[in-house]
Structures are given as structure tokens and as C-alpha cells.
Amino acid sequence: MSVILAVMSDNYLYDNTVEILNPKIFVTKPNHSLVFIDTYMWKYLLDQKYDVLALLKEGSTNNNLKIVLNDYIVIELKQRKIYDRLLSWFKSSLIVIPVGYISANQIIHSLLCFVLNKKKIDLDWNIITSEVPVIKDKKVHLQDYFLYITKTLNFLRNKYKWSNKEWIAKIVSLERKCWNDILERYGELLNLYRIPNFNLGHYKQFFYTDYFTNLPCIIFKSYFLGYILHERDLKIQDLVDVFTIFELLPYCDLYVMDKDQHNRFIKLQKDYKEIFNYFDFRTRIISKLNKSDLDLEIELKDFIVNLNTNKKAKRCQTNKE
Image 1: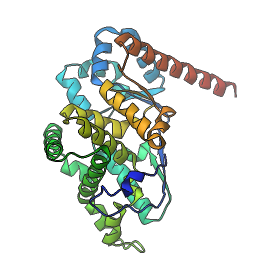
Image 2 (image 1 turned 135 degrees about the horizontal axis):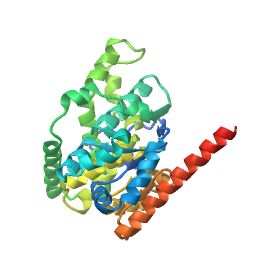
Image 3 (image 1 turned 180 degrees about the vertical axis):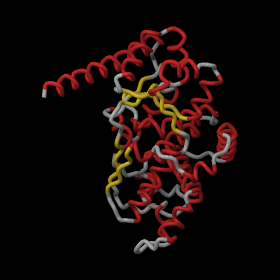
Image 4 (image 1 turned 45 degrees about the horizontal axis):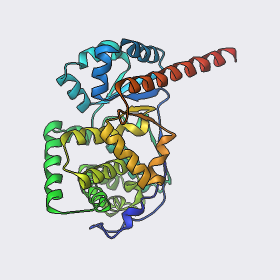
């Protein structure tokens, strides 16, 4: 995945202009297929669609797929008393990634490439899902954190009438300040080890280059939140949806999305084709947008059946060879 954010050089930024260094950013998926299903769809499946669950179970048993969640979605599932039921079906194939780990790892990996002047940045699944001590240390109660962000951004929205592009730039600037502070320890460590041509000034410079602004976690978060805040007040559920999208969607083969966010994603694809149309070929996104529960169920079944069939065909071919 290699993109250039032209909006970053607009006059909307109240920080310095971003330096365009054109790194090539790749998102490498795991060997197995990753599937994300939202809370609404899980409740629907667990209540009445055992045939779909059986297909998912078959795929997970054969190591064709893994079910991926983040810790906030786990909270939602527990609140609706369906998490234990989900575990009873998919305990061995369930992956839970704490919110923030993927973003932090993407940024740290890109920072190292920037310091070493490497143009190719491979954001491999196995690298970006590892534990990040500085995130673990700063972990706060997620619900309180989301409530604080929601109130702060809605306060700004009611005070300023910013356009989509202005909001996108403001969110990027907020992300820059936030991650600069969170990962400062890494800058100090790099300085301590006397990396050639590196000092703390270079650490700060990183956040003003496309090594930072072109990362998937920054692109998705800034554009989705920018569009929401231009349209209406932000809700906590929006943050749950967006945080899940910007960390998990680039690595998934199937993503069942909230219909409001799916509609917004389609708008972003229309307005920023060079950035978002890429995902039509990478991830199958389905939602209730202009669809019934039955339509959604049929699409989900189709994906799983094709996945299981393709994996079986590959195994047969391997055995013949």
C-alpha cells in the first residue's frame, strides 16, 4: 500500500508542511484469512443462524481463517452476554488485539525505517500485533477514553465550522502530537544508541513526513473522523467503529461493517479514489447498507464457502505434487 496524501500540503494545517519522501508502504496479511464481524451480526448469527456458524467453524478448524476482534468489541459482546457463546464456538481460532497496538507498531516500524533511510516499509501482521510496552503502561479505561475524545472533538465541532479537509488535517495534527508524546521513549532510546545521523530533532521530524502521515492507521482515522465530524456530532459508537476499522480492516479478507460507516467508506472511495479504491481488491466489505439480514447472511455464506473450497483445492494440488 503506497499512497501520497495531497491534502497534507494544503493551507489547512496549523503545523509545518509535511515533507514528501515517498516511502513504499506495504500491508502484509497473515497466511490465514482474517474475518471481522461486528457485534450486531454476531448476535444475529448466534441467535438463529447455526448453519453459518458451522461454516465459520469448518474454516477455523481447517486453519483457513481466524476471527479477529479488539478489546473494546469484547466489552460490547460481554455487555450483550454473547461473548461466552462466541468462545464456545471459536475459542481456538479467536484473536483479540488490544486497541492501539497495531497503530503503535505501524508507527514504530515506520520510524525505524525513516531513521535507517529505508524506503520499503512492510507492516507485516506478525510484527504489528506484538505487545507495545509504552501503550500497555499508558492504558486507560477504554470507555472513559472514548468518552473524553468524543466530548473534546464535539466541543471543537460546535466552536468551529471546519470543512472535510480541515477536519482531516486537524485530526492528523492531533495524532502527531499524541504519538510524539506516547513514543518519546523510543526517540530517546535511538538517541542513546547513537544511531548515525540521528538525534531527537530527527525523531520529531519523522512526524512531519509521509513516513507518518501515509500510514494506514493515520489515513483511516483522520479521514473517517474528519467526515463524521463534518456531517454531525461524534458518538462513542463512531469511535468504536472507526478504531476497529483503521486497525483491523487493512489486514482482513472479510470485514462486516456498520452500515453508516460503510456508506461513509463509499463516499471516501468516491472522493479519494487513489487512496481507498485499493481496498475493493483487498478486502471484501459487507454491511446492511441497502440489504436485509438475509442478504447479509447470503454474502457471508458465499465468502466462507469459497474460502473453504479454495483451501481444499490448494491442499489437493499440494498432495498431488
